[in-house]
Image (cartoon, rainbow, N blue to C red; front, top):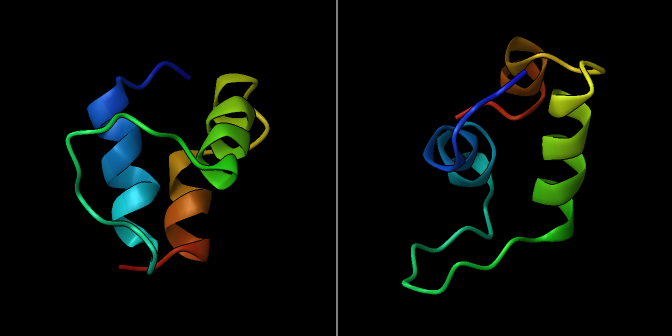
Length: 54
């Protein structure tokens, strides 16, 4: 699964209650874990959408 950074932010971060847009390019632990699981094919974007509704 190869999503670009902006797609990952839209899929993961924008659904998080703690997300705030910023000029700083910081990644939280949840982002890193979900990104790794996506890259290894352990979860799909659809599964993340089911767990983290907008």
